[in-house]
Image (cartoon, rainbow over all chains, first blue to last red; front, top):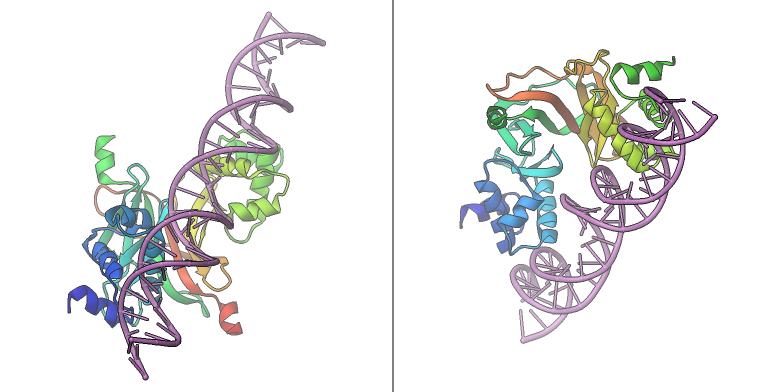
Length: 138
Length: 138
DNA sequence: GCACATTTGCAACCCGGTTGCACCCCGGCA
DNA sequence: TGCCGGGGTGCAACCGGGTTGCAAATGTGC
């Protein structure tokens, strides 16, 4: 069984050709992908399927959902095992100029003491500004 | 001169009736407001004006732009003075159940050492999960 | 091989947000 | 006071990300 298939199965997602392709695209990406980006990378797959697949992936804790810039983006969870805790999440950076999203993998999201009663399932830490490339050009 | 007017003028935004109303709505809110919420609070004002006004406010560092849940939200900057640095930003919490956004004013966004070259202008720290109210009900 | 569940693909739709454009209002100036 | 120019306003049309309804296809278990 290929790696993609065992990841899907391991998270309780039924294996299909489309899901393998979508998963593979996410595995190959160096930054979180938006639906639009997945659509262009996977021309054969309809956006409705991508939408539904990402929803399924999210439900089974296979991807994180990141709000950065103007589109939602999705990134594979790196913690393997499906317990869905979120200690692998890192900081992202959105460049206002080139509108790219960067993973700052080396920056873990700092722990924060949430008040009693708040049950946190996911954290979004996105900085906005100008990336090194765009600064140089300016 | 009323408080609203001096805030607008102080940030270099020309004073108009609509802008005063929008600013006042933001001042009275206990959590960041989305465009839709502003529209319902300010029935007389067209959404295009709200959109343009918020863009102007943002440009003049009068509001923060928060990505939480399904809509963008806007919140007044509390730092007075228009230098636009962001040391008053705090953590937000989005409840997946009731879809409300909470300000956790007491939780400052922890400092993070961004790599060389990244010029950060704003930080979004939004936790997602279940709020105390919804947990009780469940 | 058959009945049932799930997935797929397409089109239509929804909705937050923006834009184009004509009109209005206000401030400056003669 | 009357005219001029520029920004602000309001409406409608539009845009684009994302979802949904539905019928056909594809599996899956018996």
